[in-house]
Amino acid sequence: MSAYLDNAATTKPSAECVKAMCHALTEHYGNPSSLHSMGLQAQLDVDAARAQIAAALGVETDSILFTSGATESNNMAVLGTAARYGKRARRVVTTTVEHASVRAAFDTLEAQGFEVIRVAPCESMDEFAEKFAAAVDENTCLASMMLVNNETGHILPVKAAFTAAKKKNPKLITHCDAVQGFMKVPFRAADLQADLITVSGHKVHAAKGVGALWHKKGVKLGALLHGGEQEGGIRPGTESVPLIVGFGAAVKKMRETLDDRRTYCSALRNTCIEKLSAIDGIRIQSPANGSPFILSFSAKGLRSETLLHFLAERDVFVSSGSACSKGKQSGVLQQFGIPDNLADSTIRVSFCAENTAEDIDTLVSLVTLAQQTLIHKR
Image (cartoon, rainbow, N blue to C red; front, side, top):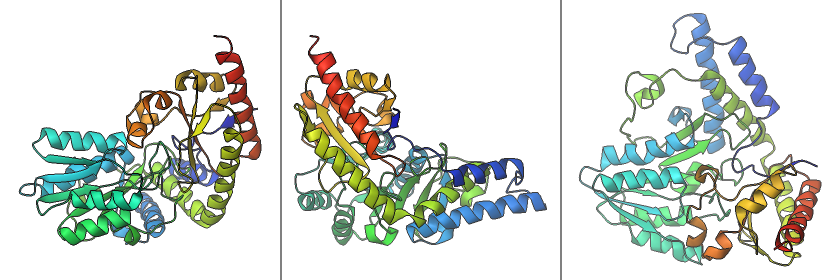
């Protein structure tokens, strides 16, 4: 039986997304910048999708910038903020457990001469928030913390950290990579005390290649691209109307079912934890109060890559960590206190509302079979 359990890497586009994209590709295919009726219709479609994303975040429609995905949005937030506000304030603060696109953007700032403070998580999230805020001073222009860790499902103390940090430095610009929280962990932009929020389409049953960046009114960003007035001149280039309208349609559908999906996936995750925990050598590495959509576990005696391929050969699809790491360890697991030997045997399971109890049973039975087959052969 096939079981797709890698939804944190990407989700299947919803029927609503596919329908909207096909309509844009075959009917409303004009350029939104064109002045004729076909262009106007395409622009109206983009505007409607922008309104859907804005409504999901509880923000003004004109504060949403469409991008090619989370990587571009994160780079735009980090590098664009530093370019605009970092001429005199040369310190930036982030965590040691961010997504690769955020980590790499801060590495770029460090190479440009910025003082980069990377704060490691603590066992207590309250302590983590205090430690993060303590790293901010009057010379800090940017602080960035993700909402949900993509490898473990930890929910980070964004609101507490940003609130305390802004009390120390009211001019501070705050950015949250909310990709794994958007449409999964209920929040509004105002809840996070963030000035910039990154979201992605293909994590919420839209297509790959589209994302968005929310920027609070009054926050200015240095443009990374040049050559047009689209997206307020911050992200020039002809908009991908099919991808954008598909994103909007997917989010609209998900908003209607957010509470039900969260409850359902939480129950699936709890069942998975219970059944995996009954297997000798399995250690659950995600916190009990983490995202209902992500579960990390290690299988003693089995390397991640070995178990992943064993499962894939039997049509059960999981991940060994972040998809962006291409199978390589990112170091994030160790930052959460997971020792190297367990990090090397870690599997990430990630759920969506289309998963079933049968998927969990299939996973558990195959993990047991892998232990019997691969470990006992040695």
